[in-house]
Image (tube, rainbow, N blue to C red; front, top):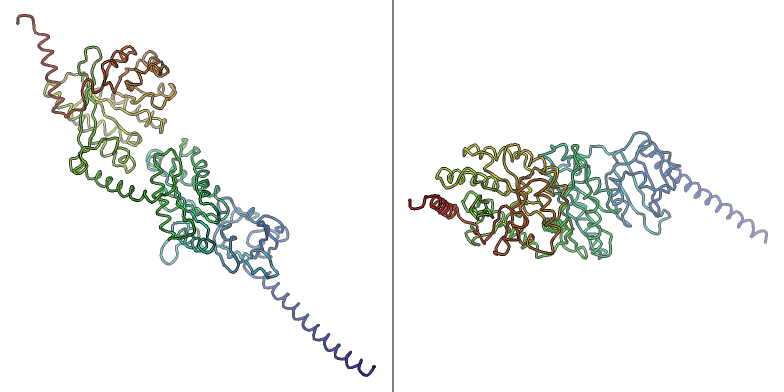
Length: 587
């Protein structure tokens, strides 16, 4: 028994030595890997469940100034500024076997923010290390760096990803969505009225506006979403990792609420006007750039819809193509003499004689026939063609008034009124344009009335006050059109340099609309402005507007919009009747 025990003990001894050698090799390997991690130039973090830091290598101190041990059990996103959490979260959303790279800023303990580049990997489920392994290093180049193809990955002004990086991330998101059978969405945010902000308040104020919008957009995103600046005043948002397609619209609504709050830029309070389009690929199918285009189409369709996000529908493409074709035709309409100015008389409600005329625009389209301004003026405002069109109307109206005056058709009190849109009202050089048109025709400024709708004024009340005051200083008369449509507080009108208020005759004659009648009476009595009733089509409306104190009226009862030649004949007949009435009896 003892003979057999000794060899076995000897063998056991040899086995123990092998085990000790094997154990020593493992310990040496662990020390080697620990040293590799601890002395590596890259900071290594292990991010566990819930985004909690489970381990931080000593290089974190060199990169961020933080004690690695004190970072344990803290939230990783607490180290990332709100504006960059979307990019950092997207990197951490890596799946097993996938490597994600990203660039964002992190909070340094002593010196503000540090730009970093991160590489994130998630080990296999059977690995002893659970979580995401994140390697960080200082970003070598500035956020405005350009890769070999010359495109920039980060916007110099806002720091957000540019279209180049957004397209890359969107392509990868589509691949993930297809594998998971989940939807992916893109939101397009188009800021209207950036042009007037730059022109009126200056480009620095415009940059302030873009910066604040970018900050709100980025801070309002969910973890893993990507916001980017993809155009001069356009931003895009990539949404992934959601179950229901309607969630994208819900995110868009929250985004609109955030973006619509006033912004103080250039010493003024400005209300951003974001148009938000939503496009969703239900199962990640299709091409990422097609979805971005569809979101842009939906954003275009969102214009004029009260800041409500619009989800893309295939029919919108055809509608947009049609609008673009009309827009191209409209740009050429001016040079092709297709835009015709008509004149609708305004009569004195005492003797119903013609006292002035309103210039009205019509588009004689070669294929569609005569197009009403209701159908093309909104498009002209969107595209900016309303500015040269409006100047054409001002010059044409002044020139026609001068011809009537030279031909003895009108007396020195006859005036012509011209409508201007909200877009024109925000043009800083509008007073100079009006002054030049009057001087060219040798007209006194008081012969011209500028009409602006209540809606246009309320779009930007402060700018409206400034521009109307500048026009009034020239001696031009001001008419507030469509008063009562939006039920504005009278205080708004009190602060405007208004000579006349034009109201809808149908409203005035409505016995159920006493509030409007009282408001109009107060304007007449307290401000001393003239009250003009338009839309008078029936004889019984005349007595109602007279009772309210309206001094002048306009409508089909008296005359429709007429060509200059037709109105000239009417004016001539009126003068003949005046001369006949003034002739002595028996003369």
